[in-house]
Length: 188
Image 1 (cartoon, rainbow, N blue to C red):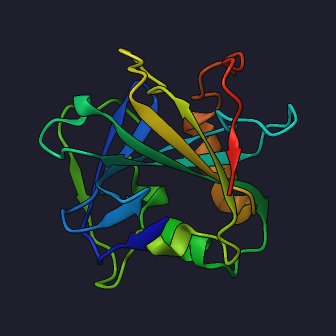
Image 2 (image 1 turned 90 degrees about the vertical axis):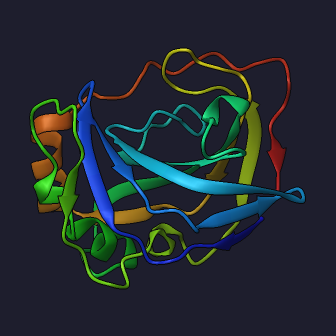
């Protein structure tokens, strides 16, 4: 896995009680010699995924499409878990620039949020880039199974007050945990 993210603008909408943050083009990952472009990010509380049955306070999903104009062809969803804690982290700096400006009501248009010129999703990643991955599906209809999930092992932190503010509007915006497929996940 290699990541090349560029600074981005921040466009947000609230759809089905889920904040959707859209990124400007030109940020990519390369996984197994295939390039995927970063399209959007969603935020869920508690986490959608669990490890050993344990939910985390928050989960951020970064959607990378094989074909940006048509994400139906599949892609990669990278997952970062967060728990309440220290406010002095890169992930907290990334989130603090827009989290309190997410529309609380459903929106059909994107709201542009002013962020720093160097605002970049790289800030979300833990220092230790160990991850595991599995073949899965989109977590929302039509739940296409053309997606690979990459889950980072290290947990990031979000400021407790910021988390509580977010949770007031978006608590329980995750889908129920799904049963494991017969295929085993792969470590990396």
